[in-house]
Length: 254
Image 1 (tube, rainbow, N blue to C red):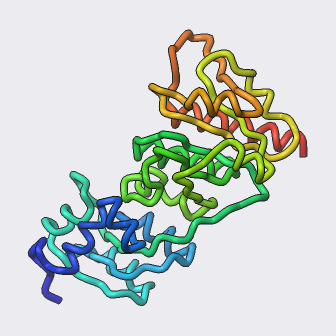
Image 2 (spheres, rainbow, N blue to C red):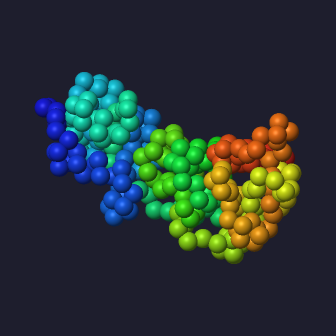
């Protein structure tokens, strides 16, 4: 099969546009880069529409043989434009974004105002690892962006992902969650997470933190002790530590 050599090819152009949040929102599709993500999507039964493979990528061809999808062979140059990374790992697939999923049987990690895709992906990965659902709140990077998907390393397919551009503490409380706001100082120690019920664990961007009104309305506030006198932690690190604390205390009480 003769490879596509031009980035102006209509199918290639359509795929490249999915790096833009507006286009993902309009079409309902996103991009998966690399064999690991595509394998995770296959296992989860996620609907794949098109897969782009570099010429000579035998492993990629073996992987795509499992799928009944349109396959497009491309050159290395075209693959770089599709993937949007310096050293892309093909194949690259177009996947339909799954509908939002609410899981009312476990606690939630809630990302509020976290704009960095790498941090959002890490939070999703930690939420999945420690048995939490993930809610993408106001001001958060699109959880289905290619950058977030890469950072989460397949964890999107192991937990419930929910998006809420408009969200309030009251909405979470009405769903039966005890809302816990993470703050740099002045909150309770992590053993407050040992209480009964399901928690909605709110984390905000490292610099600005959670809005003061959200902190005030929360049922609890929690602070990670830092005896090393570090001013603050990266939000993905803080969220991961709190997810572990929550999961370990759930295990101890069951």
